Length: 182
Image 1 (tube, helix red, strand yellow):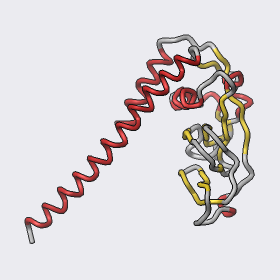
Image 2 (tube, rainbow, N blue to C red):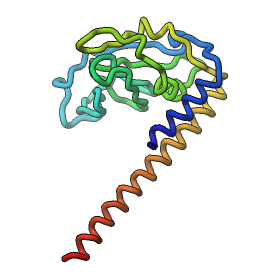
Image 3 (spheres, one colour):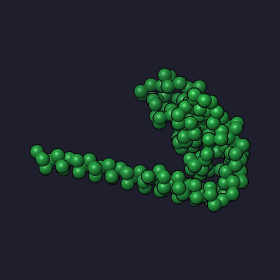
Image 4 (cartoon, helix red, strand yellow):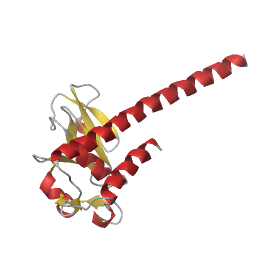
């Protein structure tokens, strides 16, 4: 439900504003040839795969902010926002914002983007940037993008903290209940 709040706000941004910029105008796309078998358990920089961090390396292919998007398989179209030095495996595309566009804002817009019309393949679905890059999204001024991104990020961080507190309280409750019946 916490992620649905963020999606709901992002969907309202999209719903009440007209799409005005092609994704190819605000994002560039690259791929990695890195395989999960090439990463190790230890290293300086994290390596992301379809299910999050899959290992570490001592080099990286992403230096600043980027959007990682799953390009094939069951999670096709799922996005993650990364900052700092890290790498992506070959199952992900690396999307970088062009000048004048906020990568974090675009990340939130892609979280609610409909990739269904752009999926190909029967057994294993794929999406290709060359196709969905022609779609338009709503992009306000850079200043407004930063405001939207700050708002959504603040809510996202708060939800993460609250979820952590809820988990801690649940564990504490379980412990206390066990102590009652000993």
